[in-house]
Structures are given as structure tokens and as C-alpha cells.
Length: 245
Image (cartoon, rainbow, N blue to C red; front, side, top):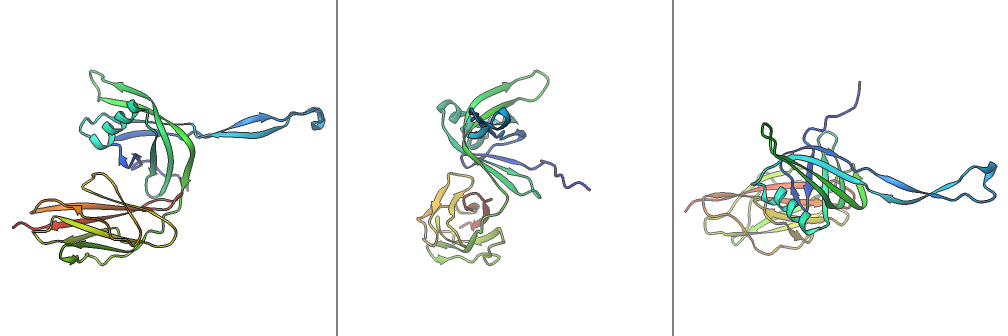
């Protein structure tokens, strides 16, 4: 029986944000330059070669054009105009569980507006540097504390490294929380964001500054991502309830 897996569920992330409704991803296409090292005494007059520089090649993808995807597609197009080099993470779908991580810049955008079909665009990203294929997961966190002005909140369930979704509550008068995240082993990059907003870096074991949450009678979604270089990130999600007055 084959061990092949379908690509459904694969995600392309540009500069910390997922690109909406991607339908096809190709690449990276790795190659190595060949250097001719033939000399007068090459055995039996056969050419000899050594490896030169590597090239991460290109990644191309197609997606449905979603004008409302300001943090994903629109930011991607803006960065194309700015000729910016950004971090790209392609997360292969479960149960494959692997990621490609690399820096890249947009070299081509091809928009399609057919009369009888969907609006879409195809993009080409040039890989800059070494594309890293990771098949092991980051160790993650040992502890995570969410604090409000009234003190540490109660997480449900109790925090555990391999549990990824939590809920907690604050008082109606609370307008912010703080996070204290402690990494498990090797140095991690730890970041938090609120309601899909901008990422804020966290230092392991150090309480963060005040991070604003939603108004009374709302639930705020907080996401913490924790990863080691060359490994797949672990993501923890927290739903923070702030009751009505």
C-alpha cells in the first residue's frame, strides 16, 4: 500500500500571515552549480566536476483573489511593489507534518479576470538563501501564564505542552493581559498576536507588556507561536472572555 499523502490543507505563510485560498503550490526547485575541475591528468581523459553554489530556485502558487484579505494577499502584493524580502513558510498538510522555510522576494504576479470564471492570480517567489525542510516539531513551552490586572487568570484546561487550545476569563473592567511563556529546551522564537493582528515577540520566562484585548461582551483570540530554527512551530490558541457590564 502506498504511503503517499494528498496536499489538501497545505498553507503558505508570507511574513507571518497566511495567504487566503491558495489552490496550488510548486517548489522550491533546488539546484547546485557544476564547476568543471578537469585538468591535464584527469584519469582516462574524463572530465571531473565539483559542486558550486546552491540555488533555492522558485516557488509559484495560485490563489483565488480575495480583496478583503488585507493581512495576507494585500500585504503580499504591497511587498511585491516594495521589492521586499520576507520570510516564507509552507506548511505541508497533516499527516505529513513538515515545513519549508526560506526568505524570498516576489518576482512575478499574473492576475486573471475571465468573464466566466473566478478572479485569481499566480505569483512567483524567488528563494533567497537556503530553503530549510523541517520534519521535526519544536519542543514548545513548559509553562504559559496569562495575567490581567487582577492577577493570573485560570486556564481551562491547565496548561500542558501538548495541549493547544485554551479558554480563560477576565473581569469586565480589564482591557489588557500579559503573557509569560517559558520554552522547553533549546532557544525558541516566541511570538504572540491578538485577533490575527501584528506579532509581538516574547522573551522566554519574562512577563510581557500590556497587550490590549477586545471590549466588554467579546471574546479575544490570542495566538502564541513557538519554534526552533529548522523545526515546525508549535501554536497555542487562547480564547479570552471579557463579560458584559
